[in-house]
Structure formats: structure tokens, C-alpha cells
Image 1 (cartoon, helix red, strand yellow):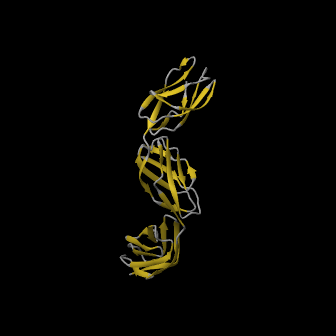
Image 2 (cartoon, rainbow, N blue to C red):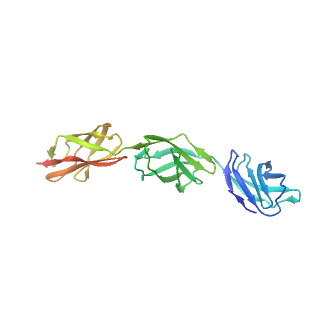
Length: 243
């Protein structure tokens, strides 16, 4: 006699359905000695809301004809989220984010501002999920598991960056030149490249300004590009490496 789902929150309130035969007129559903609230009953099924509990318990249906053979129901601790990385992504969606915490093994949905996405469970402490597209700047992030929800989270959606200018426009092949980059939507910068080579270091000073130290490079003109959690963009002009 199966029960579905076979897992639920320690706080109770999980809707379950027990199927079998001769279940009409059910007078009680017991979860390890605790009575559940019956919400529906037919000759082949009983629907109920689980009571609060912990661990694995035997569940049985009581009818005027007797008590059914027990089936196990497993209580799951509510989820706890400790980190979301990265904490922002492109408005176009498609970014993979990693959510870490505890009691995540039964995660079945992650909502971004009400839009549900099915996560990939890596372990009880980690899940990954691909962001949906949205027009919102910041949304509530809600993790759903069999043990309950964790909703004390927010996720930022970022517009693609644009690079409008940078100074100076030349520097030595040895690198080490401080270059000031201006544009829009730069605050979440994750990389700055000169000719495809990452800057020695960089810092987002504001949403419109990033400072970067040029890496060593051969002679010649190279493209300057920036990557943020919102996407990537290249400068309209090239940077010239000189002796």
C-alpha cells in the first residue's frame, strides 16, 4: 500500500495520498502514533495532511474493517541556505548558480520572483539551478524541498555592460599600466581582458567605472573587453602596447 509523497516536513502539513483497497470509511490515518487530518477518502485511497514529527514513522489507515499494514513516511528537516554564488546574473537568463546549505537533498523547485525552475541536486549541501530570463532588477529567491521552504533570499538580475572609453590608450609591453574604464552596468565585473589576457588586477569602483592593471603583452593594438554577471562587451577602441 504506497504513500505519496513518502517524505514531508517535520512541521507537518504535507498533503499525502495512501492508495490500496477497502479504504472506504476511513476513520483515522496514523503517523507513528499521531493522527493526521483526513482530507479525502475513496474505496481505493485516503488523502491526509501529515502531523508534525521526526525521523521515519509507520503510517497506517484505520477503517471499520480494521487497520492497514504500515508504510513508512520520512520526516525531512527544513532547508537552510548559507550562500548563493554568484548572487546576480544576466537578465537574459541561462546562468548556472550554486546554492549551498543544509537539508537540500529533496529540493524540487527554486523560484526566481515566482518563476519556478527545477534544480539539480548535487548533495544534501549543494544544488545548482539555471536562471530564467526576467525583466526584474531584483527578485525573491525561494528554495522548495520536501522539508519546507527557505525564502530569506534575493537574487539580482543585471543588464549587459557597455564600455564607452578607457584611458590611457597606450602602455608598455611589460604591463603594469593603470587603465580607467568607463561605461554602464560595470559594478558586477568579473574579468577585464587586454588582447584576451586577463588584467593583473581590477576593481569595480562604481556602476560606471572600473580600474584595471594591464598584463604583459606583445607589441601592437589589442581589444579591451569586460565581463560582468550581466554579460560581456568590448571597447570601441583598441589599446596599444608599445616598448
